[in-house]
Image (cartoon, rainbow, N blue to C red; front, side):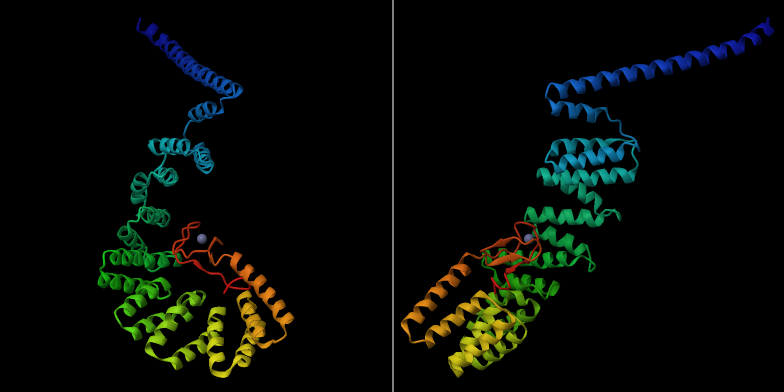
Length: 389
Ligand SMILES: [Zn+2]
């Protein structure tokens, strides 16, 4: 009897194996049937002109594993770029929640999800994500840049300063520039409250971070000037000619005023002579020509201007040259022609924008510290060249 039982064992094992295989096959069959049902449902949506429902169904059908992860990521990014942020969020959230994907992939999906939230304007949720990623060596730079963008958008300058400082001395120049502008923003807020002592402190911090920050120099100079410290104001403003020559025309009127209040016409003349030699734009040349005209006559001023126009032709310089010519001619018809020419040049100058972003090319007739187009700080400056300064 026992021998018989031993004989039956292989049969039982064989039966078990057969049944097991059958049930796996059946399961696969059921899964396949379910998939094809959903696939046809998706196709039906497409055919009945309901592509949104079809896309959602196909997304759900795509199982997340190491082989399809990249497809999910690419799909999510595609949706975000197309402005379909809800779908992008759903895909990336789905990835982050999957226990089956590795930690590295999960963090990558989090980075994408954070960007989805940014695009959707859900800054608090984006902040939570980037805050978690800011210590990750792989993604810290990107996470911190996104945090900066959030604090900049929400005007939380203290937090923005914290993040920018945390990036250390190796941070990109654009971040250093931004950091000095964050201090300038705080200075502006202090001034709004009438606290000029606090504003002075913030402007100085801005200059410590970036000595080329013209905004901080202008702010400091104004505070010094209002406090009667004219020489201090000049000392902080004059270096703009070297640190940020593109902004020379912006600071020139204040510098002229300071020298005038100090009664230092010789100092002003020397300053202009130096600025002209440093190619600081046509505004400086015109101011220099004005002084030359007052001291040595119109002929000397014209010669100076002609020399400058040969090297750097500008409409503004040309306009002044016409004015000189007009004063010299006596014949009415020649005067009339010059008037017409002056009017044409004037029209050209008037229709041209005054400022342009050095980073993205955005042009404006108003000065912005933060470019509305590319969100870079301190890049909108007076236009240089033929049409500009
Ligand atoms: Zn820009």
